Picture 1: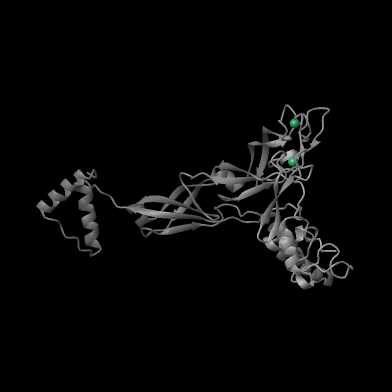
Picture 2: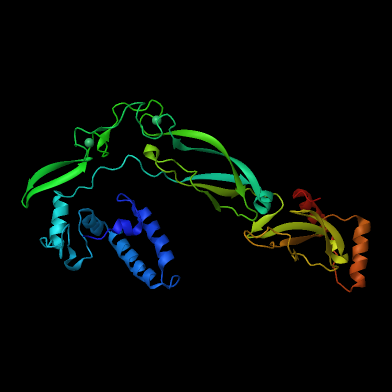
Length: 378
Ligand SMILES: [Zn+2]
Ligand SMILES: [Zn+2]
């Protein structure tokens, strides 16, 4: 018997490339010799790799689908292949068999298929991402039709075998070519490849087995989440066609811009403007933090563009203890307009410090005042 590569990865025969890749990664993580020293796990890991090699390659997967084994010695090994007493089926034979299409049936596709994941953006304020919140969300997804429980058929009726394909889900056509007869198959147009039709569809869902529904859920947002993070709600996504199992719902955090704080990771940054005199003399400021107001003592001689770090006043770490820091960026404001008295005091002050401050000519003064007025500073 050919190996059951689908079974090894635990995926359906009609699994998408993405589903195969996901199943492989999950198993590989579980059985990788680095994480699982059990010798049986090692064998299993080899099997998993072989199955992925086959199923991730379209040509090899097609060989599996016609009952062959692309990794068997000789490359062939169809049903009753080598060692089973049957005729040896070589690689090329399998390819011919497939591309000839005569035995290339993959059978009807199931009406019930898994649903897809859904994603929902959730705008939150900084306070909510920082400290967590229980947020109500309105979800609009497909849910199982309650009238037919997903079957798609009207009450008391059943699906019927498709007359066109006889339930195979595909129809074959024969063409004559220089290689001889080539038989190819395509999905049946009458039943959509299902092999069955619904003569009396459910009036609620028109045969789809699912309907759209809007509902409200409460999602618990943990403290410390960040913009663009996603929270998974298992089984809250779209129900599949035919009432198939639902996918997951991902709630994507969209953090609103805060009017005071900007966030970098778990640290917060804000700007505070202080007058030149306060920077020179030192002062006590009252600043806003996420937790409320806080006193901040500014040292005498604080320089322009300096930063004060307040530890533990940032955003709490997600899944951990402790918090980021708050960085207060200080802008020192130089006065733009001085009264004659203030100007004289400043000049005296400069003189006591031996700082030479040249007095602008009357004309220069006039022009600079005129320019300030023009720029709206005066
Ligand atoms: Zn229905
Ligand atoms: Zn059909």
